[in-house]
Image (cartoon, rainbow, N blue to C red; front, side, top):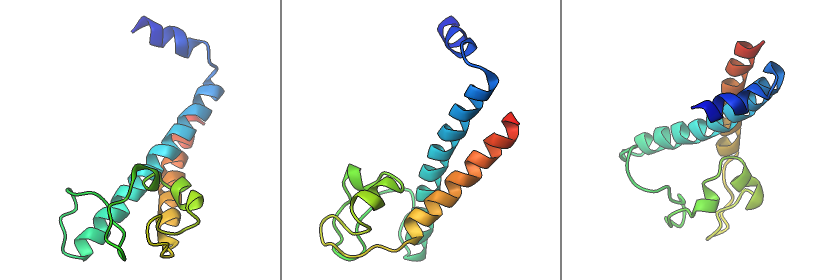
Length: 111
């Protein structure tokens, strides 16, 4: 536990605030992705807690590089990696909004 205290004590409150806000944004993006996935599965009558994410068109399971919030959408040009179907903007937008909300909450805490 001392190593954590030593590591954190070398940063100013402002620097820790920046790290916390960036981390909160990333966690928020992942949370936004998971919530959207859950809502979409529930809307289709599927279980929200089990199973891998799949393309709605080709029904193939998404690979790890397709599951990175926002970044995977950009890397793959907004298309399914397997069938090249164009994906909805709802995915990166909802991930981004959730990330901004999480980051905003942490920002208010540090300022």
